[in-house]
Length: 423
Ligand code: HAM
Image (cartoon, rainbow, N blue to C red; front, side, top):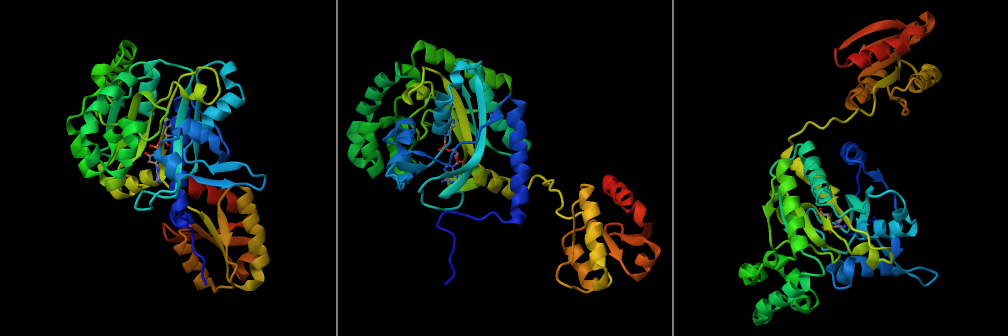
């Protein structure tokens, strides 16, 4: 019986991987432009890291983690997100002793036991940035600008930035009380998840997606009138800087985010074209996380974006001709099997000159080799036949211009290069 991939995973075959490569290259360039360097962290961590970092009462920790016991009876978890691992590495390597801020980015697979559907997978990929060590609201604006500009650079239109503040441990408790007072009379009407959330984290009820819960919270008191002075000033500065950067945003008092570590700024970038899974990226400030994970008090802010969703949006809008480099620049064809060894040696010369090249390995006729080269979009074909061997030259066929010429063996590499440069 055939074995298929596990539910919620997907294969990225070569046809698609060139697009991934293109997007990842753009993401890396953008992160580096803003002063972020890449970290590569493990795919599994001690389960406790996420329980403490992401939060015990979150959906991620309660329902979505791939947790297992290893042979040494340790509880390990496939990372559901990247921020907690960055915080752990920042503390473990005492990076806080270096000049701050620390600006990191990462790209890699994440794992959540979610209900799979378009744009939602159990293994998916995130690109994320994290800036540790500064409370400056201009860092918030910088981080948000990266997210928005990536999407713009990929030619994706109609993205909507939603912005909110979730306050800090000074001002949030008072608001929590007030919100609880508002929600309690409706407790029986809330969905099962929200009934649980009501006591653990009533703010999460605000961003429940079920129609009835949305109706219930319609007239909720907003945190904005309960913010402490410092949180209020911080939020004003973030908004003002974003406006100066000409980054449009929608104030969204219901945006709470599903992870417990957030303080102050919270944001999400939505692409309505994506339907139910419209959030292409999200993030916020987490000034208590490093301390929660055992490090010295250190502020932080970051975001992560889902690459599958980014690709879906890019494809849907098809607003950009993706610049994907061809797999094959030159194909070496033989008129007869007896020149196969010459073809191998020429191929080796071409590849050593840094040009992508290939040949036939299935004993095809010359006609079939030309067809194969065409299918693989080879720009040039070099043909080796009896006359060519006798005269120490090759036929060089330009598949785009549909022209061919005889080229002496000693000049073949230069001639190939000059055609490729001008194409
Ligand atoms: P998050 O909102 O849980 O935040 O995930 C960020 C993005 O990952 C989402 O906006 C979405 O595009 C993508 N994503 C999440 N779950 C799935 C899934 N099951 N399938 C496909 N894509 C998915 C975080 O993970 C935070 N660590 C972000 C952050 C970084 N906050 C501060 N720094």
